[in-house]
Each structure stands twice: as C-alpha cells, then as structure tokens.
Image 1 (cartoon, rainbow, N blue to C red):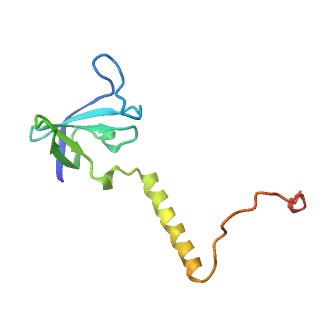
Image 2: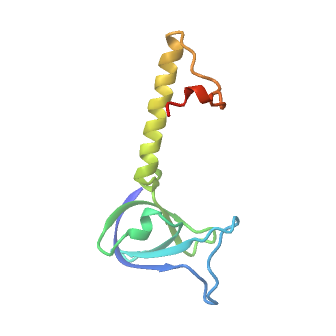
Image 3: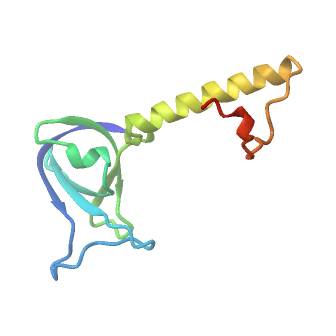
Length: 127
C-alpha cells in the first residue's frame, strides 16, 4: 500500500462506440484513470457508490498498485478498509451488537424466539 496524490483524473463509463461498460452480471461500471504526482498513470474499475469516483485532483489516498497481466499498465485498488460505505459499517456494527445480545441470552439459558406466530387474534386488536 502506498499514498498517492492525484495530479489528473478521468472517468469513462462507455467505450468508444458509446456502449456502457457492463460486467458479467450486466452491472454498469466505470473505468477511473488517474495520474499521480510522480508521473505514473494507473486505472481501476469502479461501481456506483465507490469512493474512488469522488476523488478530486490534489487529494491524497492510500492505494494498492499492481501491474496489469501484460505488464504494460498499472492498476490500483482501494484497500478494503476504505471501500465500505459508512452505511455498511453501521449495519455491520448493529449486526454484531445483535449477535452479542443473542449470545448473552443463550448463555443465561434463555432461548430466542425461533418462529413468530403470523396469525392475529381479533380480540388482541385494541381498537
């Protein structure tokens, strides 16, 4: 991992014929090309919502740089810690909290409810 400062940036969402870039699952993606202050040029794939799409010239970011399969180009990717959107981090924290509460109940001998009864008794309705 290394810290790079962006000197220039471009984003392509379609090829020269105007056809949108699609992955194997037919999801649209973009190709982000950056030039960093030491003159190296590198690219990465990005999907909607990826943090790399919001990067600006002059920003500094930690990236993993690797050569392409043919060795002609450089690719970069954002380390996993930066790619998770804040909402996903909150969901993971809440899930961990819920798992901890269930484990605490089970350790105390309580069993969590396995199945809710979907039937509503009319006598239980307060109005």
